[in-house]
Length: 339
Ligand SMILES: NC(=O)c1ccc[n+]([C@@H]2O[C@H](COP(=O)([O-])OP(=O)(O)OC[C@H]3O[C@@H](n4cnc5c(N)ncnc54)[C@H](OP(=O)(O)O)[C@@H]3O)[C@@H](O)[C@H]2O)c1
Image (cartoon, rainbow, N blue to C red; front, side):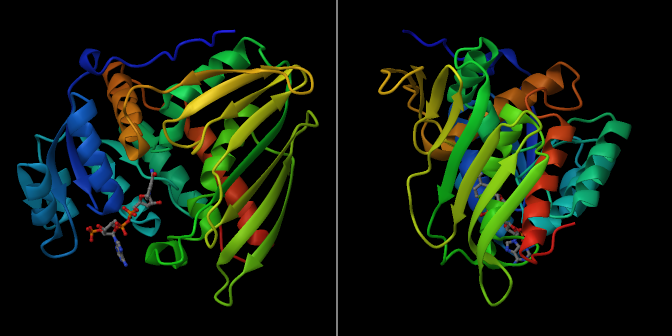
């Protein structure tokens, strides 16, 4: 059985936006590299609140303007869109600055750890008539589009179960363990949660078992979500052990299984009903690997700007908010702040 081809945005057919980056750290470095290699977008300015960092980043990526304040960047007339790539506790203020300056905003995940801030960002962006989108890049990957087509075509019947895990030894990653910025559930758990949200919507019932450090941050969690239809999802997130990062969606007539890691360019397989049913695969042979896959969301973003959309059809504002409600409710169960 052959699987459908992904419906991809043609990078040459979308407006070539002039981008500014706020918070040029690790993910911004991946972003700037793939924008250059895999899109027709242009990064024209970068701003950092850390002395010297914007200049170093600009010279590494041949960016014209390096600025020492976010205010200066958003005030530039030659910037159309802003990539908010600082830590989550800074996303709200940075995004609001950009929106108030009339810029479209792509905001790293998780959008914030405070739901009221996320609501405020979306409300202000809608009021100012600019696109605001959470950088849940997985939604825009080719393999996920193949899966969406399979789900829409009823290839696995009624989806009943999502199983997904994101376990990565991030003990040495400082930001992972900062309250308000990190927590493996907030940082990594948002991926399985976003997958569950895409398939089932918002759960009616949720529960979690957690191993919590002395400082209140989760080291490992196993979560259970249940939906009005009776469908269920479970996912384990660990910040202290490495494990295959897999995900599958099972229905009453078959199963869709993503390759590893499920959240980056990989593959997707489809098997029919029955024990040991053979699996057919769509494999990503684009050569775009790892965080190079951020390019797909960037091309989609430019497409939406060109079409005058204020939210992503693949992850509307309400979808991002629902994911935050889920992670926040789970985090509250073991005493980690989440509002
Ligand atoms: N999509 C993905 O696959 C992916 C992967 C990794 C991270 N992320 C997300 O991207 C965002 C940034 O992560 P990152 O790994 O790039 O972070 P990072 O390199 O540690 O830092 C990014 C920026 O955040 C600000 N920052 C860092 N530490 C800070 C501190 N102690 N106090 C105040 N500001 C600080 C700095 O902004 P200034 O330069 O302005 O000072 C820095 O340039 C997070 O939301 C994270 O969840 C996404």
